[in-house]
Length: 475
Image: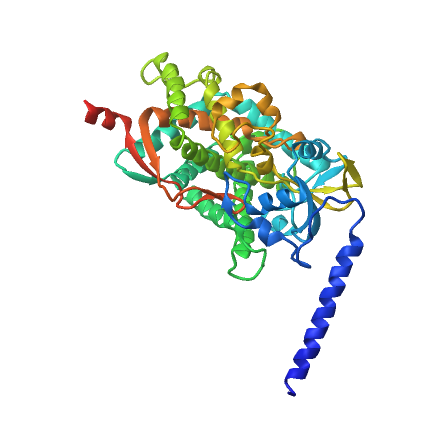
């Protein structure tokens, strides 16, 4: 009995503490909030929100909450009281009022991984300066023959490397492709150089931090990611130091030289950060989008056949071995529809994080100052009131210009993805050679999962066969 009494006292104190926390939550909530629940004290509903699900679906959490509370609801996520928006008009309103009514506000744990000058985190004049630096380089380079030829050569090289393969892990393969392209384009590092392997190794460790618990203890994925980011920064700094020492000017014509060759207003830390942001976007998100396209095409034979016809028509108008050009790219209209539809169905980016700078009223919803706001793109992409048969992969829906007003595949407002145009060129040229040279099948148990970042259950394992081999068998 003696041992039971202290446990009873502890239980009473825990019960009282829990009651006080619940009362605290209730007192802090202003009137006229959207319906919803704040979940457990301290933890809220974060674990349920982050539970993995097919990326080409809303997931049970959003489905259940929208059904119970409506398309805009309150919750407690990532340590903060939050308004979750699955409403297209509210999402647009939030993104278009960046720096006026709302501001970017990612969880503190992400700051340690991304760095304080990441485009995802910074706001105001610093964001504008960094974004303009990246955008101006992309605008100037996306149509240059040097870049286009580099994309095509690397695409052909990858196709050639598969000729004796019956199966490939496509997501891993295409990550090699985008990484090689980015280190070449940004830093003039050849894919086979030891430095490229070192950067890739650190980047893979870095990426694991985004889907880990934010616990900074030795050996944890989060701590390893923070250290990997520091090593990547040191690598870029060393390259910058060498460039400045030998005064290469614009000899290499890569992104780093463009920054260093003019009177840049960026500090060394800002330069390192924009380099890593460009590498992150060009490596991870572009590769994931390419994998989603290949996955959806494998399940949409009509779309794949139409895509082949578009690229066959382009190839027939060229001499044998003649490289693709900017003019060819501009003819790839259905290819762009495929890209946009894969973004809508696959949801490379599920949500963005914002915070209300003042009390906001919109469409009868009240958002208190200081509350987080999460515009959820996934929910809008699968909204049956906006899209006919929303779960169907249908690139033809993009022939209706109104579709582009109902989907935000590359974000919106002043934070519209600066690398979108570069990614579309890379994907279009890669698809050109893929659809003209290979047939593929996915595995029945392989599909894209949102963790919330998209991964494939089996790495998108494909059965592949060169088209020329199939033609020989049929003859």
